[in-house]
Amino acid sequence: MSSRKSVVLVLGSGSSRGWAHIGVIEALEEEDIPINYIVGCSIGSYIGTLYASGSLGSLKEFVLKMDGKKVFSYFDVVFPRSGLLNGTKKLKELFSMHTDVKNFSDLKIPVIMVATDLETGDKVVLKSGNLINALRATTSIPGLFAPARVNERWLVDGALVDPVPVGVARAIEADVVIAVDLNSGLVSRKKRKKQTIHTEKKSGDQHDYKNELMRKLTDYYEGAELSFKNKINDLLRRESSTPYIMETLTTSIGIMQERITRINLAVDPPDILIQPRLGELKMMDFDQVEHVIEEGYIGIKEKIEDIKMMLEYTYIRQF
Image (cartoon, rainbow, N blue to C red; front, side, top):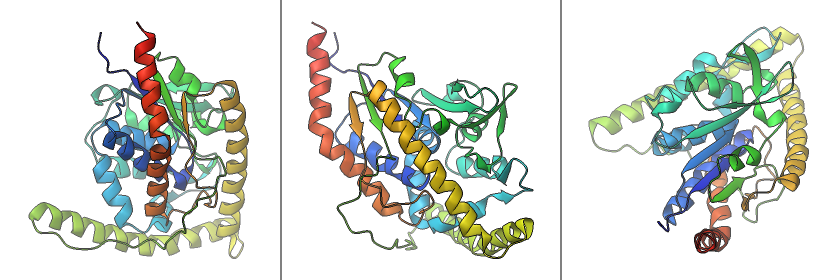
């Protein structure tokens, strides 16, 4: 019997805090902890899928170089009937710039995503078919993004019902469930630093191409951010409405997610719970990428002995 036990990694919701999942995965790989399955919700699904496609390094390079505050400038403003932003086209671009993978079956590691049926309120598990459609569903924050139509159902962010879907992970019957909760409210012990945008030029045609692409994207964000705010103000016919609306909406969702997570984890706790200290960050603080990744990395390092003991105990228990 092999001593290599199976691990399912649960990556939860949390918007800007989601970059912590990058640090979590890097720390697990550094410690040679296997990741055999991934269950994701919202931003956790996006990062988990890119990791499962072998493209986490590309994502990390991208988010460290861009100005995170302009993330939402990348999406199209639409008439606010079902959501302020239309994410389909741009999400596809943000995903496809890192990988050519199209379907669940093409991933190197099995990934399961969680969304919410807008009509019934049921939790919907997505694990086959087109990845972009599934990602659109699991990341569709109500009121901010328009719902996604998948298999004749209107779906929105899975965080409405299960921000850290441990129950879905348990159904896989892996040996150890490691879950990442980004909404614990714990505050970092480290002082945040203003993000530095890395623009150093590297030699080689491939790096030159990437740097040129990053420069063009940055130029795009600069112009799009102002356009985004102007469109929102025009649509809602009030001055300085964008910060107020965004903050109210995202803070309300954050409060909801924290309460639901607390209840769900009490009912169905993981074997190992990682709670990066990101309580001081708001959902849209996308300019703290380095800090957030580091907190995810630290979260694993603080629990690494527990993880290793759990893997060892699981092995011994089978004899």
